[in-house]
Length: 359
Image (cartoon, rainbow, N blue to C red; front, side, top):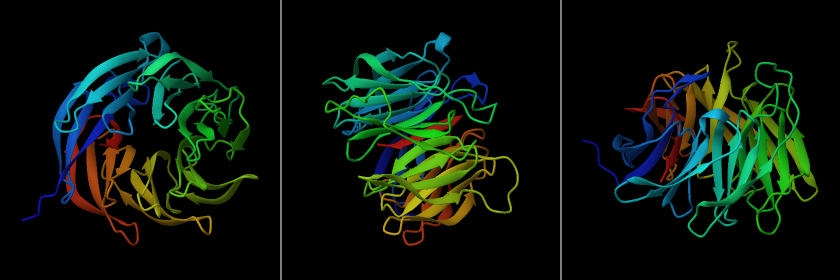
């Protein structure tokens, strides 16, 4: 008999509507319980919402932010939910209409009282100031770019996919899949980003930057490239930003179509994990910040199509992978020394899962 552990809570964003890239069948935002000893999941509640694909949490874990990823004509927006951490119940506190189309990512920096929404379809990043209640106040400061990439089907124009504040609170970095660049904007003392970028990190032509992550020390930036299935590591220094390492997320023997999904770091700072949509696996690499290197560890099949997102548990013992098109979350255990994954045998049905966030 397995020992029962303390139950943690997590929220899962889903697609609820048909879209060009997914037949959304979710019901909204799912709140799940997670047994920290066994990795078993159980459902607490579902908050009805329209295409709440990507979610983020406030620092105090009492507020959930969820985009409404729809076209500009259908009313995109941001839902702000109050969370009861004991019961897991969500209550809509405010609905904020957002300009542009297909908001696909949201991030929060509570130290700066700023929230950032990335619009995939129209390419903008929306920078909102948060009020004392943690809700967006006033109109957003809009960061827009021009350009395109060599992949005519995916890079006909800007496609913002992720925006994060650097650990030193000096810059906002954003990944634009459409123009093949990571773009950096300086933050003014109030946290608002300058309109004109002060640095652009070009990708390999057609690579398509998707997600960003800062290493535990804050001295390096990791960039996940969706279209060529690679991860790059950049050293962040006072004299500039320098690429120091790059790895493929796919086995050398694989020659079919695949694209990366979510990217997450292990709490120890020693490992990074990336979902492969097409190969339908989770890739792992070892991070050595002292040497500035990424070293591939291996890939593990999820057993379902399109692992859209992955998430490592706060204690670093488990990894959860969401199969968007086969509608479940699979739980792996993590070897603390090697970073390798082992299937626990636990899965939980979630239709069209997109984003996983531990509370």
